[in-house]
Image (cartoon, rainbow, N blue to C red; front, top):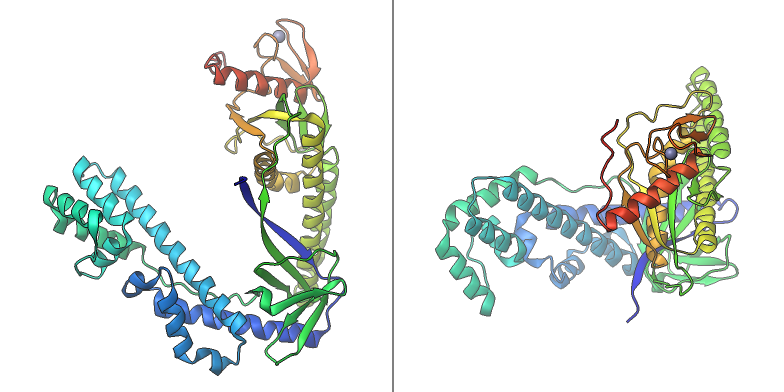
Length: 443
Ligand SMILES: [Zn+2]
């Protein structure tokens, strides 16, 4: 089987959707939210731990609850909401167990045997459930045998108490107020006429949403409503096959910047307009914030602002992604070396320009680069970032930086500042793999 990565594909509605249609979608979203809250409330407690997997019991009980009929919600939406909420509950317990395990591992008071028992108790769902419910775990075969052996080696009573206390500390009520969208299975939609038809609460009445692209998917989708402008966004999770490229053989050192997104060790640049776009966005935000302060009661204006701001960000993200694609296509790297993100320290060189928007995007760019590397079987290696732009990539001495240029007083090297930094990234990355490089002590 080919390896895949999960990716979310997005589709957008074209033009404004009639208000009455939006209302119909909102009704579904509200009911969807109600069903989820019902499931959270009824199955979010310790008493339901034993029926969370595989979920048929919950499904049956929800059918019998009569909630679907009371809401008049089509079953395609109803069961999506049930399993959606169930997924949240499972994720909640998984996080809790991981948290307890972490706390236990850090606790110096436990012996290795005790930790072993705790790991077992947290891993085996029946066991965890039994501890929280003060019952005997129902185990069978080898697992039961293992459990009995483990309980003989430790004071299980005391350890169970520890698990319960830790669980109580982390227990919380799941709840959602956000009726901003809903999931729907294939039975609830149909693509056609350059758009999508979505089932509503009225029988055989579907809402038509024109789309900006002609793609169609056959899987569970998520419909997100963007109220201020009557826009709709459709999210389609897709398993994308990992591509591997025979001709991707290069090792590329990178330097990230606020003005130019990426500079390679060979001096090539990608995302040259990042700074320009960011400055435009920042100025726009500043202008709008000023006019908002003057006119605070203008709430519809505020909504419009949020919508426009979101669209600007979408535009910026599209640009970032295009440029990252171009980077991979043109550089054909097998390995990419990138300095680790520095803790917010000396990055305060934002004098003349307002690069705040670019700074916000830093995490996004990294994340996208990481994902794209994975999709294309490119190895991404993070290297130690300290002084990476201050050192000469040829001799390692500390140099001077001026107007985007780097000068080395020791060996006389002159280079673009970002290129020098990217060369250092490559140097450090290669050395780390051979364990040759150590942080310079000179600073
Ligand atoms: Zn030098």
